[in-house]
Amino acid sequence: MASLGQGLERIAKKYRKDPLVHHFVYVDCYAYKGIYAGDQQSVMLDKLICEVVLGSPIIGIRVWTHLHLARLTFTLTTNAILFENDKSTYDALINNLAECGQRIARLPILLLLSVLNEIAVIHGDWN
Image (cartoon, rainbow, N blue to C red):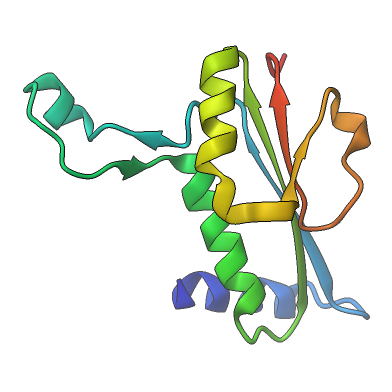
């Protein structure tokens, strides 16, 4: 992930503004449960899976969390917006995001997202 941080620093220097603050929003329109029972090949071959495979919501949030902890030469703020339409899958997603703690906001509508570094998990269709 160091190369991602270095890449962001190069972009920040190129488009330098004072104060140097960048805000990124990660949007996942099909968040699913945040984890999978295995990769596609394992599922297709009907193999027994011993460990789960992380999905894009958890990978994306972990990357941004890592970058927050990195010593970057600019200020980085983020938000994540995750959509899941199926109620049981949405509940599983909330459980699988437990490592995010108080950063999770269960929002009925997107307009309520106001805190930096907050993760909006929306039970509903993205469109």
